Length: 139
Image 1 (cartoon, helix red, strand yellow):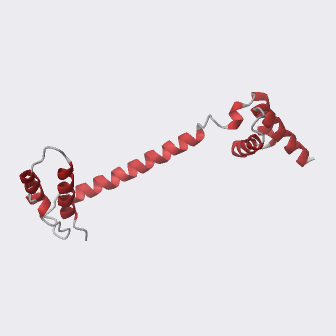
Image 2 (cartoon, helix red, strand yellow):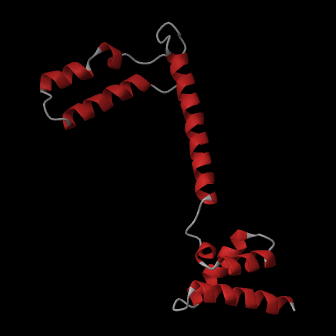
Image 3 (cartoon, helix red, strand yellow):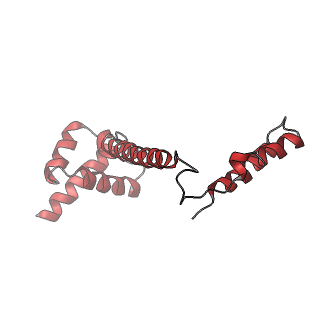
């Protein structure tokens, strides 16, 4: 099992040497404090009665952070207003989305590729080219 508290003593010593205002005696006292110097024994609950609470808090915090990041990432993907299709005229947007059965991802990919191949042209021109190419290939 990991020995967490001796690692904490090492970290406290390292941090205290980096912070200004700590004398060598204060560093020694911090490193030798009973809470940091005693090894952690996970088999005896009387040594650490808060261990279960700490573990539970860490698990719940991890789950909450993961849920928050997942929803934030999903919302960011949905509200991506910098996509190429949103920069074109609404008439062309509707026409392209009808051709692609409302697949915005494909529309953005096709438009971005066309725009990359012809950077000097406008977004509306690129949209018209994508529409033209789709209609031509389906005929």
